[in-house]
Length: 178
Image: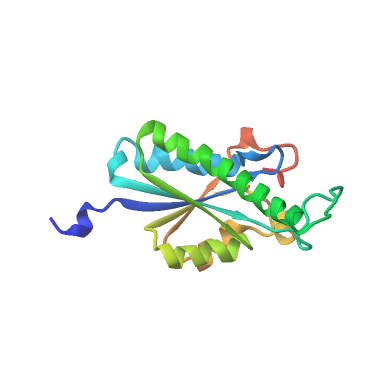
């Protein structure tokens, strides 16, 4: 058997935090993409796959997340970066923990920037066999104003992309929320 035949299929899953509940809870779309990947692709062949979780943190335009905080020293700014990294790690811990519970090999990491660009860059760097992304299933009007990471990646990522829509019963009152 050739070496390539022994290597597991590598599936990158883009994940983010819930816009409703915040860190460390995963968004409805991220959780849905993860569950779909387990149920429809991995199934019982846990040794045949390796999941790669990428979380992209989007910095605010001005770099400040807490409007009412007081910044009095350089250490205060380091604390912000440390806190954001810790929140992202807790989010990734959700997915890695679930994989370890069922024995699916995985890796996870955090990057910062525009999710569309970062995900496509990481696909080029890591070379997964497949990219799985959740989608909020926004209508055409909402997509114009909000934009979608999944549509961008489907057009630009250098690997096959599967987009998983949220289930109708999981859609919040405002579909932009996740």
